[in-house]
Image (cartoon, rainbow, N blue to C red; front, side, top):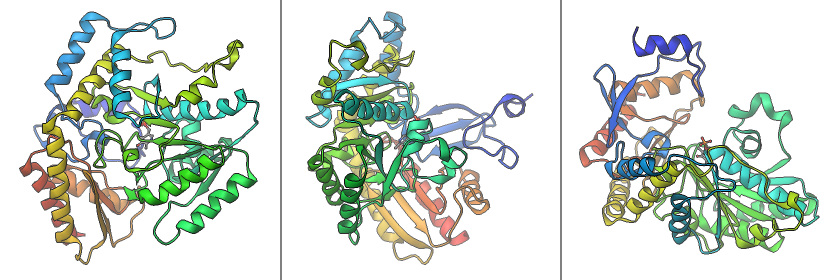
Length: 421
Ligand SMILES: *Cc1c(COP(=O)(O)O)cnc(C)c1O
C-alpha cells in the first residue's frame, strides 16, 4: 500500500472535506525551501508551511541545538520545576519584544496561546473584583480553533456550527484611511455599552482573512482608546511575529505597545510545537495574592518543552543574524519589483507588500473553499509550487532562505495564473 492509500484508510485531515478533497501529497523529506514528495516530485514551499519554517526546512543549526538539548534533558513537568532552555528563551525573547513585556507563559500551540491571553484578561478583572464579560475583536480576524480563540475569530467559515456556544465578543471593522473616525467612535461606544476586558487583534496584517493590511496609525488610535478606558490590548503575533512584516514584530511599528502578546509558528521555525503568551508586570502582579485561586490555573502538559525552547533560542539567534536580516530585505525588494510589474494587470484587483508578505487579489471572485479556488491551488501544485490561495487572494510568505531562482519561479507561475484564469 502507498502512503496515500494508508492515509485514506485511517486519517482525518484538518480543514478538509474528505468527500471532495483531492488526495494529499505524501512528503518524504524537506530541505531549505523545497518539499520532496514520495513520488519524486518537488515543490517550492511558498508559504513556509503556514509561515513556520522561516529559516528553511532541515536547518542544521536548529537541529543541532535541539539534539544537544534532547541528550541533556528531554522533558520535565513545568509546575514545580524549571530548566535552562526555558529561562534562556524567556530572556532572549524579552530582549527583542516591546519593552513593556516582562513575563512569559508557555503553551504548545497558537490557539492555546490565545486561549491563555483571553483567560488572563478575564481573570485580571475578576481578581480586581471588577466584573467584565465582553471581548472586542476585529471583523474577519483569525485567532485559532479552540473555543476562546474561535470566539474572537470573525471568519464564519470556521465557526458556523459553534456560534451559539461562544464567548461574548463585539466586533469592529479594521481601520482604513477612510473609516478611522467611524471605527474609533464605534470602539468608544462599545466600551461604554459593554463591560470589556480586552481588545484582541492581529497587528498590521490579518493573515487568514487573506493577508489584509491596515495601517499602524489606525491601530495606534484604537490602542490609545483602550489604554484611556482601561481595556487591555492583546496583540496576536502568531502569524506576524519574527521578522515577517519588516520588523521583528509588527508591534515594533506601533507607537503604543500591547499589554499581552501571543507568539507561535515561526517561534520554533517549524521544528517543534510551542507557543508563548507574554504580558506586562502589571498583569502578572494582579495574580499575586495570599489566596491561591487568584493565581493563573491554566496548564498544558507539554508547557515549555525543553526541546522546543532550544529550537526557539536557536531560531531567535538566526533571526538576529546579518544573513537573515539581509535576505529579508532582499525578498521585500523582489516582492516590491514584482508588485510594481503586475499592478496594472487587468486580472489584478489589488497587490500589496509588507516585509516578506506578498499578496494579490484577483478580479475574479472565489469562495474560500470553492471549486475555482481549488483549481487555482491545483494549478500551482501542478507546476511545483506550494501556495494556498485564500479565496481569490494569492499570497507568498517564503522562508527567508529561499533562493533567487526559487522565488522567480513562484513569480513566473503567478504570471501564468494571470493569463490562464
Ligand atoms: C495560526 C494562527 C493561530 C492559531 O495557531 P495554531 O497553532 O494553529 O493553533 C492564531 N492566530 C493567528 C494570527 C494565526 O495565524
